Image 1 (cartoon, rainbow, N blue to C red):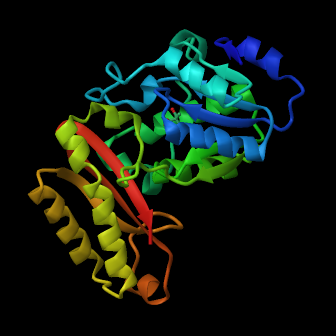
Image 2: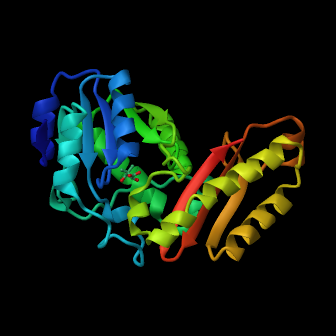
Length: 279
Ligand code: PAF
């Protein structure tokens, strides 16, 4: 595997490659990321991964400085997956001057749910993803469904800018007890790690209620938030939304069987976890 940090060198290396499959990451790789690499391999060749902890998508009080950086271990994992190039730019490589041009998702998608609690987050994500796409020039790129809203925003961006990159969605990779794998799980104490799968159990409960015909969405959301709070969590939101645009479903949408997803974000101790489940 070639490890490349400069954009020019990456361009030289990738010249003439028409079927590149790309997996952007922020490192601290776990089985969830590796499952994205395997899916990428099914959709293209060669596979390029990136590791870049993108300051633009972190708020001033978020965990940019303490975000886990495990470069050597990540390299070993990617080598085993047969990744062809690891693009690992420094901040100077990717942002040699202040990144003044940014991609701002529309408010009705970028400022709801995660965007409401993490202002500017999605602008940071889309800006870096567009820039990484411009460097790697992939034919396909793989994003996990765990970050459901991110996946939708990136997909819409690719469509609206007519990018030559197809966005592939990967199923969420879960531990045996149901917890969605995430780099931030490493922040959990043993007690919190034991409690963490409750979030996914609750999403299943909500989904089952909807499936069995309980369509008072607000009541379901309120009860679910209360149940988490009783267990000591601090929920930001548990929300039942339309899969198509992440807007709340109207009574008419519910009546005609609109496809739904329940999305959630909650703090356990100081660790903020997100998860979702398609209903
Ligand atoms: O999902 C992530 O790890 C990041 O948001 C991404 C897509 C690599 C952009 O920094």
